[in-house]
Image (cartoon, rainbow, N blue to C red):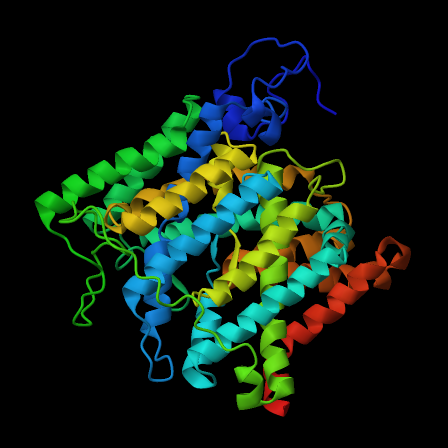
Length: 498
């Protein structure tokens, strides 16, 4: 229950740091219909904060408009190369529409776009077993199946069945996950021998890495100095610096069009002023899916296993994301559940099917939403702002490409630091709780998967609580989830069998 005498209660670490210290009486009445619908004042926010948070979320995840077509067109899609421009335009369109829908229906500051990891999985299937329309048809079916699970209440029941220890561990694990994403996107850490290397040859070499470091230090200073909009200001300022650096040094991309590699180049987008500001969107990919073609090509059981693997990844990625974003914004109840979560889960499920129907892979709730929440967002109005920006990006793709990942990545690292502080809420005196929490936290960044971390935590939690004679502590649904994860981790031998 909120305490009116503590006006900053319910805000994230960043928002508490930047909120004015003043006494407040009871909650302010809604000022207008917009305020009333989105509960902006009721959640102790303002329109300015929501707009700022919406912009921050957009800039931290706008890379997907460029990265998704790189992933999908980079694979040999059964001899049919996907048009880069169309994938980029439809990626922005679906993300914009579904994020706006999340804001209007879910009324929480969650943004959606094509799920990283899932898009790589479907690209592999499309290049080895199925045509692109066939794999997209399975994605549509997966989204429809999750929608049914939401409508029956099963998805919400699963969310609420996860014990508080694991929910906290999920939030902490995602904090580390965001950090490693930011460091990897900027090139601070790279695949090496034996596992991970630091920068280029063990050094922070190259101008792009310097830009990242400057951006990280700037955002850190702005956060500790309690500057409102610290992350957004940092992203914009670092982007300007990157544009100036590129204009002077002419660094170029990390991967050249001829296949060459420049270790000291920009990781994804090259920050330079575009020749054209507006581009006409190509939406020809929409509707390019075959609902049951995959079943005809590889058989019912094999197709169902693919649907199951995508569904588990989609299902539990969202559980982790909602938990982490809700925890960062102090929007969870005393049991660690998100109040009125059913509309959020429903929109997320519909987004999965919409991504398949748009031929750009399953769309899901993005963990980068935590950046917007850390910058003040508390309501669905921030999602509406983010969604509108994605629709604008569909027309102004050249402007979106100006923001390099080295400018957005520092925000992910800072948000990761904020989220890791929740580790203080974990129980440390019972190893049957410590081990599941530890595996959840460790496997998310180390395997680059939220789903893998949750799966390891669930299985070991059920096993260890039972082994210590505390079987009654395990919710019946946790047994079901544990079995599903066992099947998920055994998918490779099952697929070979069938």
